[in-house]
Image 1 (cartoon, rainbow over the protein chains, first blue to last red):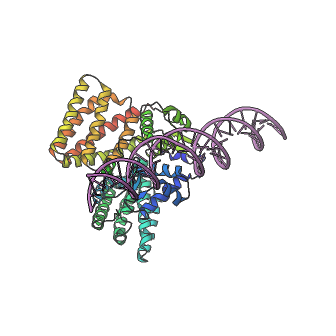
Image 2: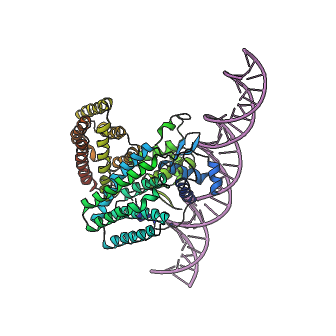
Image 3: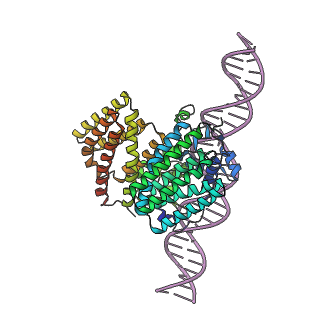
Length: 226
Length: 226
DNA sequence: TGATTGTTCTTCGTATACACTTTGTCCGGA
DNA sequence: TCCGGACAAAGTGTATACGAAGAACAATCA
């Protein structure tokens, strides 16, 4: 949404609130703050070495993004993704990523495809090295790249936020599926390169189905603390 | 997302920041603050009769929702929806509302259908009275109700936010299409009542196509002030 | 004319204060 | 022992003030 303005002037200054937000997100995703855990403003301020104001502003955004729940007069707690909402999430993600794949197929330039191919290569290599963390990282990068190629800012920003939640939900456990899913990625990029929107959409749906099934299995374990 | 917690205790206290956010959103949607207009914290604080703190927190959320753009060290301006992003918006909305219609068809209870029918009746009546403002309002209510019936909180919250932007984009101009779109609404509710997911999805897509075409025509005029 | 400088506006972050809620603890009485 | 209320502690919600730094703009000077 209007990135054109954003990098005019006054850019490159990262307000503290944004840094706090980023730190808070990763802390939640990484499990440093567990679902259900109470997040008092003072404590966060101390953890991040800032005053209460930046923390408060970051918390409001984190709430809008669904990472925390704020109870009036009672403060914030880390949200708890229930297995019900996992299915819901994938239902939405399926639609969105299918659209992204179609748009990407219709709009991708040769350079776009090349960058996707490069990611695939790195992924294959990392898979051989059994470097699962790296594979997971490349996995995210690939999906976000496709979103970017789709050229639809709404799609991009919404799916990006969803994607963060996906990572949160199975930061553990799903790693072992990564090598498997990489084969599906190749199909997806092939389809995008072909420029065939229908085919790309089918490939994306196929991938999402498998991922969703895996997530579901994984979710049976449960992760909450409370 | 976790509304179950929300209405436990400490509820019913609406923090100022939420009131400010609501007021800000409607002010932007209603065109009181025009796209491109500068929003200084002091001014907003004065306009709403509060201190700067609640305003700042509301602004961050408004930014996350895409209503304003914040330039570091320069402040906030009302976002400008370009006709490019209108098409993008409808592309996303199409997918999401199609999903919502399908889920609603699959999950709607008799009471749900009855509430939709009631809205249709009110809409027909308002159309006869030529009360376009009321028709537009009922239009929103209907769509949001379907989202709610879908029972998917992600879908609901994302689509709701998109919907606000739709209203923003043609708060004027699209009103005259409302009576026409009402016929499509009846098709949609019929399909939901039938419990046939495919049919509901087709009805939603049909409706969205028409709305998107109308929005596009309407958008040619342009609305920005800058 | 064009570059530089200085002033002003505004945001950003910090600190502080205080009212009000919620929560937890303690104590006395049944 | 158990209950209930008083009381204190913790934490949020809001307001206010202040200093630092960036950005915009006008005035100045070459």
